[in-house]
Length: 293
Image (tube, rainbow, N blue to C red; front, side, top):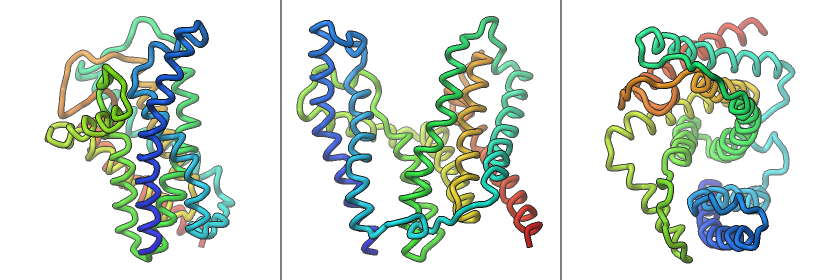
């Protein structure tokens, strides 16, 4: 229970530090742009700086949190060296990409999406970079540190559900762009208040939060069963690349909420795809690990 309290205090600390830091970053960026330095910063709204402030605060407070939680090595988080890391990484990518792209092919066949006539190659490059960087960072944090600390309570399934809820909330609760037209010291609180406004929308809860939560559970289960981050990193990379590559190749013909949101990771249809991915992953784990005995 002490670890849970420390983790909760860490998240509260991150929000407080980010709330204080975001206005400073925004005003500094606007000042630099006004003086002709880094003029591109002027186009970013306050919400962008608030989101970056959260990342900075999480990084700044991470070392003190690990120290007071007595985390000195991977073993303290329930992680062990994985001699089959390459196999797990590649399997994770395939297990998430194939169901996602099969779903995309069906959506094209039913004219929900159609192929683009021109392709922005730099955009594909951004998808590849995101597919590498985001899984490494988010899996190390959510499934490595947060889940590792929660698992020390001895309540495995509660830990999986909690970290999946936190993962979904971080990605789901975001204020709309241009929420704060005039930036003050309280603008961060305004952003937080607006981000929770989506809770009252049943369609968004069904189409976005539930899907994110299930994907979070899949990644957490993969980590728990392998005692390693390589399988969830592969799964996460496959999800980002599959969704990003499909968005690069196609454009949506019709709006289909809550069945399908802005990409293949949002909506009731992706929720079904996530369920299929879960079943395939558990089947693969069962027979792959059995073959090692």
